Amino acid sequence: MGEWRKCKLSDIANLNMGQSPKSEFYNQDGMGLPFLQGNRTFGLKYPYFDTYCTEPKKIANAGDILFSVRAPVGDINIANTKICIGRGLSAISAKNRNNDFLYFLLHFLKNEIINNESGSVFGSISRTDLGNIKVLYPSLKEQKAIAEVLSSLDDKIDLLHRQNKTLEEMASALFRQWFIEEAKDEWEVVKLEDILTITSSKRIFYSEYVSSGVPFYRSKEIIELHNTGQTKGELFISEERYNEIIEKFGSLTAGDILLTSVGTLGIPYRVSKDDKFYFKDGNLTWFKNFKKLSSLIVFYWLKSDIGKEELNAITIGSTQAALTIKSLKNIQLSLPPKNIIDKLENQLIVIDDKFQANLKQIKTLENIRNTLLPKLMNGEVRVRYE
Image 1: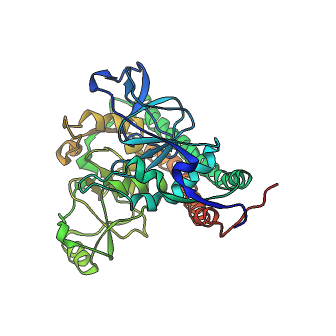
Image 2: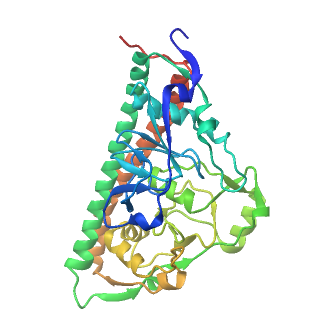
């Protein structure tokens, strides 16, 4: 391995464990430093903020790696500004200041770190356990070369995600134009239940889960599918149980939409022809049997600003936000004439084709990165450097 050496994570990195301030110092008005208690507002690479703190106890600096040390352990982001961190996070920085390499090294170590979790209820990892993780560490020049290779893939993935964000904004602008700005009094007013069927699924009990079989998705998996087009899929039911259920209740078909309805609300996923899975009742609401508006239009309406406003208006629950089937059925829409609906459909087809092509490319690039990551980090694949 040449210049590679074995050491502990604490030998190469500073580990700054978070500490939660008193809640009386929290606010949503932008006063003080942005505050992260844990990974709740983690993004693909950088977090966003909805809470601030005027009396921080522990601070992460811009560029520090934010590592979730409480359930779920192992989620990773990069601090994009100076922030206050609570007890669910550790801010990690490289002693040689090469945080780019350390970011990928922590991704590589993630599974090993998760296996060192302690705590029987929530799962957590201590500073000592984190610091004792053993690593292979190359020279600084090779670190930079490895980080450059992996960063180039991440940058392309990030670009494609930003392109998809722009496409969603274009679709949202179309809905605002046709459903708000160009709306006419004589347009037909319908309830959502008039133009599609809104239902849920057959309840599945924990005793029915098996180690392999037909994937069983919760909100978590649907959000992952919506964001990246792929998911790990941690739960399964048997093929026999799946066939029993769909014989009685029907199966998901291409174009059906699942909407997250508890916790993280309003994230839609449009089922493809290759999908085969079952889903958790209560957490997800099933839209099918579309009339007057296609599933593509309904899907992008749910993703649009207008759709989100409608969903926010019917959200219930003070401790855990939720959408009920009854309230969803009663959402009212003013339908444009068919020629406008057809025009909107054609514009959305162009947007969706590009969106799906980007998702496919994201999946390919992520698979390449995920294949390269362990090989580069254990020295199996070497990169040239001066």
